[in-house]
Length: 113
Image (cartoon, rainbow, N blue to C red):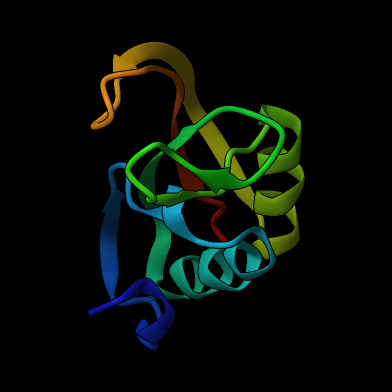
């Protein structure tokens, strides 16, 4: 199931989105984060990783990425629901096109009602 098809309500203890939401166009991410927030049980955990940057675009292999800044992601998460940040760190990886990429790894918890 794609995240834009997620229609559950308080059904999951956790959601894992490793290097997949970074392919979602910016204008669609807030809606997907709202779906994830709704699908999590109170205090449910959510992990996602994103490529850091300022401008959306394609890599040398033609793959689309919504490169985002930590500030933009923080505002987008906040617009999707109340979250508690558990951890936020960065690392550098080698992308599929063999270029380095700065990644943000984010673990949040749905704030209990």
